[in-house]
Length: 120
Length: 105
Image (tube, rainbow over all chains, first blue to last red; front, side, top):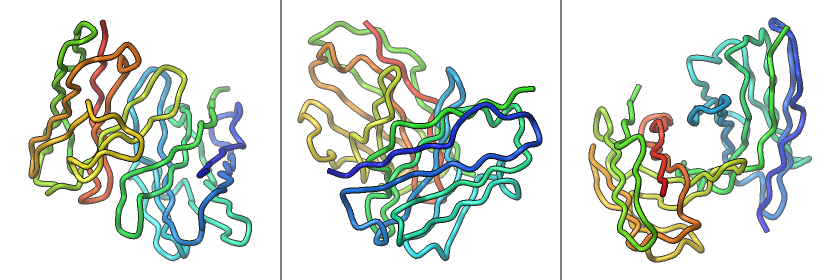
């Protein structure tokens, strides 16, 4: 079955960096765009970034633009999120999610999430 | 940025009753709208896409309607497992979520 598994979360100090990974299985990874979505503790969902199936097109939320970078390795069926200059407000559970299809950007399924805590 | 506004923030209903959740977009998103269900400690799950198409495996008691700026998620007869938080998401112009509606007993 289609599965996404995030990893790489943890506790990091403000201003430092962290890289998240999302390992995909059960589908042809190189055919689908993949998103990152985050959820601060007790809050709602916030879209973070998306990368196209071929890795060429990338979009970011204004709140992370210039600090976060999304990338993918289709040979490894893995998505990444490089997070630099982390702030307290980046504390959240980070989910990766597969798009419904080419140009069809509903999100299904989602991974279980990885928690990032930014704290001194 | 398209702003998505959900109402009410909390909806108190009883099992077996009908629940109607609303989502409004600040500008037209056509039918590019999805609904998700999230239970405590779990990832969101896709319920509806294209405003009205049920995702695979979603029970028929869930239905979506609307287009343009006004959308509705209806749960026809609430089951105990339906008590959760529901989010709408537009994917017409980038991607934004509503703030969620908590469905409680």
